[in-house]
Every structure is written in structure tokens, then in C-alpha cells.
Image (cartoon, rainbow over all chains, first blue to last red):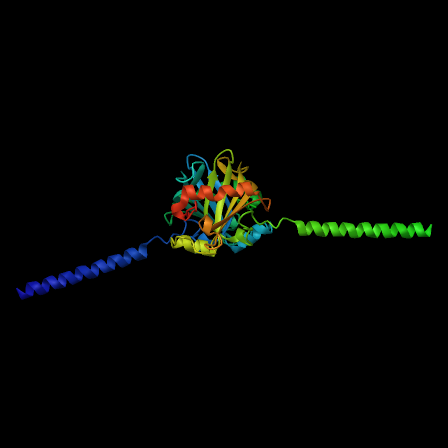
Length: 170
Length: 170
């Protein structure tokens, strides 16, 4: 009886270690959240960055948006300093547009949808106008196919503004 | 002839001084931009403050808006710390909503319309929920009649959120 008890303990311990091991592996396997192609990540502290401008995106997305920029970005905007210097980072936050519960004529942010990042590095991203792109849903980068579309659109529509759509809201 | 010339010079000098005087007076008379009733002014550096949330206001105003808050405001939002502490300042920027020239489905900020300010001082503004209000167009406070409407509406609609409409956009 004693040996059965001991054997159970050993199995329990093995199971426990295996569990810990798997959890550890899962922890390591957590998405690094670097975008395909560009390796862009969500920058720390971006939610405190200066507002560049809010925007509204029509159906089917129906989103309220806000672009914020790091100090390099904000300085460049303030001094109309194009092209943006290396180290510029722009982050676009987006939320489902939702009717305000408190004020009938107002629309306010609902659930967050995507976070989109542009990083300026004229050497690293020389083939895409000096910009690296990242598109994230729930903190995870979306797939490569989606990232293939970023630069083509920015290049086609806003090449003359250093590939950036957003203007500073004065 | 000489005396006429001298007299002209004297008149010219008097006219010049008068002009300088008037300009100086106009400089002094520049609106202090303190709101009626509350004496609230536009706070320095607010354009760099943290975004609390963007919003959209329907017709007839048709505005894109963004509320930003000073560090006390942002901290209070982050910690869901109601009522807001004294020293909290919220600023709402507003722009005419304008179709983006670069992206058909987007609406972006056009001309700035109003800047609206709420300042928390529970003693100074005890009779209005602890809040002082300021509404500014082109940097100048609007009239007293408009300022009479602020608290009544905030009191009627968002008393339970310390008289503040805006929620933090996560």
C-alpha cells in the first residue's frame, strides 16, 4: 500500500513539473507582437503621447480614431519638419463609434479595435519610404497579408506628406 | 518756414506717441480670456496633455472633438478616482468635421471652433459641483449667458460621474 502511495506521489510530482514546464513554454510562446515584414512593436507609453488629431472612419468600420505621436513626431509636426526624422513614431488608436449614453447628439469611443503603428527609420525601412508598419488587434500583430497593404496605400495617396495621412489638428 | 517744419515735427511726434499709447492700451485691453462667472482661463500647455477621448458631435455643430486632461485628470481617470481631485483640469478641443482630402472614407478636423475648459476647485466652485467652466472662441471667453448653461446641463446629465461627460478611451 505504501509503495502505491509513493508511486502516486511521484506521478503527481511529474505531472506538476510537466504543467509548470508547459505554462513556462506558453509564457515564452506569447506573441512577441512584432509585425510581420517590419518587426514593429507597440511602443511603451504611447497612450500618454501628444494628440496629433482625432478622426472618424465611415462604414463599414465605423470607428472613432486618434493619432498620437512621440516627442519627435510632435516636434516635427509643430515645425512642419518634413520628412519626419528617424525615431518618429506615430500610433493610431481606434474604437467602434458608439452613441453616448449621456448626450444624445454625441458619439463616443466604444470597444477598442486596432492599434496601428508607423516607425521612421530611413535605413532599416529604405524600401518602404523609410517607414515600418505594425497593425495590432488585442495587442497581437495581424498577418503578413494585411501588412503587405500598408505601404502601397500610403505611397499611392500621401507620398507628398512623407507617406503620412494625418495632419496636426491646430 | 522753419517754424512750420518744426511744428509739423511736433505734431508728428504727438501723433506717434498717441498711436503708441493707443496700441499699448489695446495690448492691455486684450481679453484676459477669463470666463464670466468662473474666471476660468485657457491653461498653458494643454495641447500637450494626455488624450482622454475623442468624440463626434452631430449636426448642427458637426464637430470632431478631443478631450485632454492635465496629469491630475489623467491619473484620476486611470485609477477611477472619483470625485476628481482639486487641481484637475479638462480641456475639450473642437473642430469642424471635414472630409479627408486624402482618404475618401475618413473625416478629419477642419477649422477649430471652441476650446472648453473645466477646472476642479471644490471650495471656489462649491455651488457648481466643484467645477468652474470656460468656453472660448478664438481664445476669447464667450458671454455670461452661455456660461450660465454649463453647470445646469452637466448637473442634469452626468451628476453621477462628478459632472463630467467624458470617459477615458481605453
